[in-house]
Image 1 (cartoon, rainbow, N blue to C red):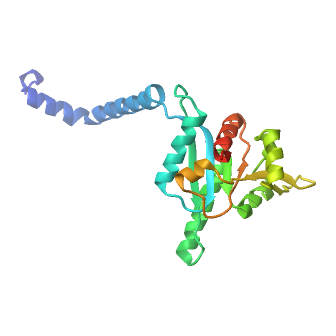
Image 2 (image 1 turned 90 degrees about the vertical axis):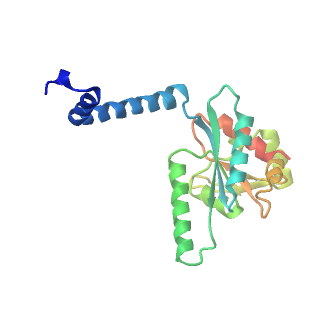
Image 3 (image 1 turned 30 degrees about the horizontal axis):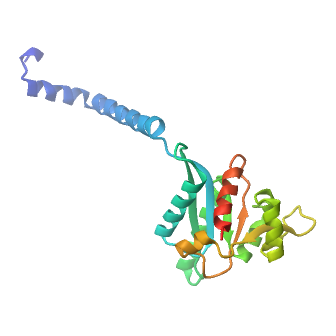
Length: 218
């Protein structure tokens, strides 16, 4: 039967039988192009401007989202396609193989975020904060907090001193989050004493400074 003698339905079936791989390939390319245009040109994902690690206690996903939205709104403007990200690295008591596995996975996740430059602020207990200082993760607090504030925190006994591998003497690396209005409003980190310190990431220091003021505000 000649091609021009085929019915429209037969012609469509003929084209599909012989060219379906080509058709599928073209459709896939179109879909990928549409996805790329939408995600990278029309609606690009916000760029990270400040990563915040809450290390130790478990915090609900709802609280993490609320904190993330609040910080983003306060340290960015609506016309900037920027976002602050809050990540909760929580650990169990280490009882049983399942707990130990979860703790190991969570620790691996923390290091992944750290080395991928996704973290600018670390919030944790005194023990965990000093461990970061000793591991050379963080910068001294005076690089992020104004001198007048540092003097006030010194008088109040809120500065946490430690030594990294290069320090010859104890240096102020963290500040106690005492009566933080932000944390109180969300009823998180009220069960212990927590400190805020800073992981240096070039180009994001100013956002980290702004975020720090939110956490330190009383």
